[in-house]
Image (cartoon, rainbow, N blue to C red; front, side, top):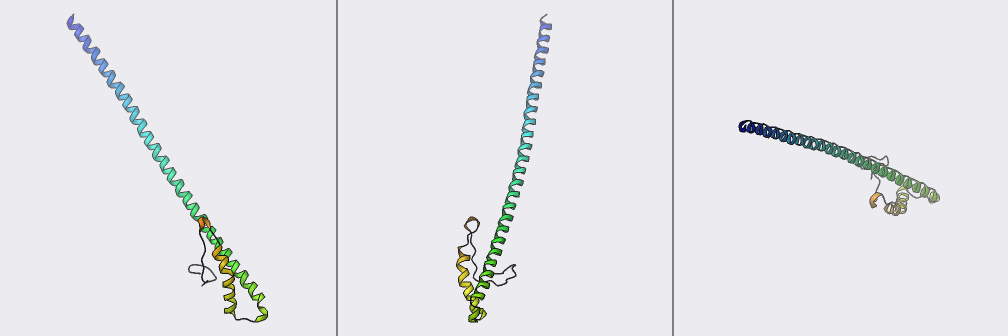
Length: 138
């Protein structure tokens, strides 16, 4: 009877050991799966975040470029308006073009230098080289 009892105890111990291993394996598998899924989700969130930041940065840059282009075009219109006004104002004096241009520069430079842009930026133009615009226009 002691042999049967020992055998039955060993089987019971073996069953408990198998159950414990199955329980530990199951819990480990769940933890690993949850960890892997969490890692993949966090990675996708990071990618999405980086994409959104990239899109926002690009949008801000494009908006600032449009704003700058508009500010420059508006400033050129101010210059053209002032130039026409001075030509009309001094029409009866028959001043040479370079003197009219000098008067225009004097009147418009303070306006240009007082113009403030985004983030306290400013425009500082000493001379317009190419009135058609493009690179190196001023």
